[in-house]
Image: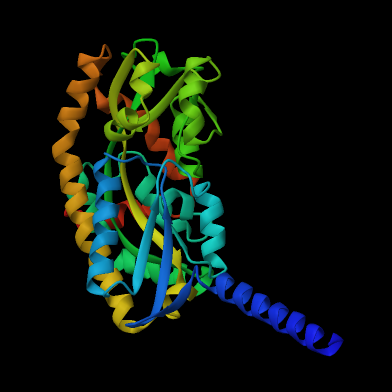
Length: 337
């Protein structure tokens, strides 16, 4: 009798172990009637309703449909998957994560990529996209994959022009002198703000609203859809259209994760990321005036300024980064300038 009870307990124990092992595998791959399945968790600081966020959802739906449900892309908005830099580090290790990220954050690994986050390097989405589709950009992308284990799925997700958000009117660059600003956490962005006489502050995007509300920071910079999505128009009086960055971003995942899935699925992911990035970017462009008007209607003053004055001050930024003067010339050649 004791032997039978002992064998029964052992059997139950083994079943529990097998079940636990099965659960640990389910996040990255599993089995379905159609074969092995894969899940990719994609993080972004953007919120539902933003054209780019909605484009990511459409990208996810398209991948799911074309792979018969064998590849699932789960979208995590409002920074709920974690900080961008943390997700990038996880992706390097082969984790099933991806992130929508600007090129400046990748410049620590491939310095050339940071040029796309430089001030006034391009004037609109079409120019930024032309660079992102060039052979020059492909060289940088290949280097990122081969040397750092990060794969760019597409880099044509345009979020708009970034402007200054303040509680004091800005007429000239002199009005920015001494202000503490939250900006993109990339060396080129930080250097740009310093060139404008500001003090950049490291702060998560989710902390910008209370930071402005409580006076921890004096200013922030953002594109209209993100400003409205985070309700920052509630805690600033002025949006000054400096257009200092054209924010083009890309979906980045681990090169190892991509290599581990069937080539057929890889191709689908690349194709849909490219297609939906362009579609979402066009919707972003079309939405900018609407977002601006909504914020004006809710009490914000939107100001136009002489961009050339700001551009002249930020020209010095290029000399602070090795090779950026030459890279700007190469980009101008690509754009036919």
